[in-house]
Length: 191
Image (tube, rainbow, N blue to C red; front, top):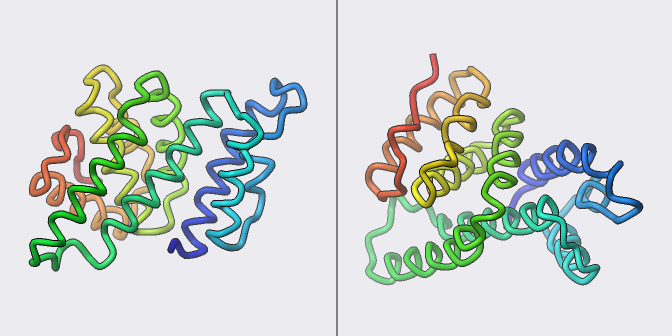
């Protein structure tokens, strides 16, 4: 399960994206409306279901739903820590999670720009290691799927300059090379 700091990142993201689209939504409920302060992952999952049930069709809304699902897939894939994987079943679990990620995000090329905008906003408000790490992974995998996107570059530029974010970025660069995310050249060190 996600911890509350990750939820805070999603709330910040939803508010930033939703504030621009809420005025043009014509009264339609946005993710920003629903995510304005959930305290648990269960509430976030409920919000995701509520938006699906309400027939959310706008691409920004659908992109947020996809990213919530994608972060959950990656979080579960990396629990326990992938650096310690040694058993064959761990490799199978990781391969299945990566396939689910591809089916959730990479099949929706029409949403790539919305994904990138959301990931860039998350990077701007970076405060949680695994969320930042997975933000980089998703951005590089988007770039590998469509070289015209340049998502990793905008995400890398958005991260704050700090020792913690620099260490996280360096770990992401090494993991990208080892796990073949694609577009690893875009992960550059922060100065």
